[in-house]
Amino acid sequence: MTERVGQLASISLDCPDPDLLADFYSRLLGLKEAFATPDRGVVALTGGGPMLTLMRVDTYVAPSWPEGDQHQQMHLDVAVEDLAAAAEAAAALGAVPAEHQPSPEQWRVLLDPAGHPFCLTAVRPD
Image 1 (cartoon, helix red, strand yellow):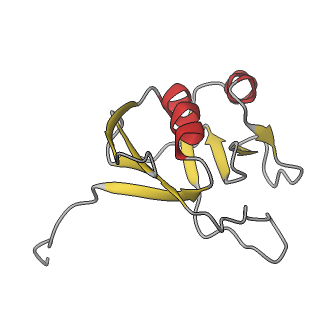
Image 2 (cartoon, helix red, strand yellow):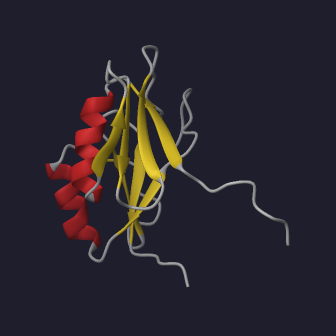
């Protein structure tokens, strides 16, 4: 076993409007603001493990999924008890169901307000 160098502190998402996504993910995941730069170009949220950091990118292009020119580089899986109820609640916050749903019995793919795919899932690790 190797000794770790550090621990995961944050997962960062590029976006055109960090405040918009901070509000969305705060309400979706029950997070609170931990840090923001004076210009609000970076907003970090805490309260669910590693921080979720939203970073303004003026040339941001939303990923296309599952195909297209701008591939997703990563996505979040959010554990829920009831997929249908959670999808409805996420939509009320501004999420949009993705057209392609490869396994809707186990995962529901949605797009956040900036177009990032994320999954609601009933699958749990052992």
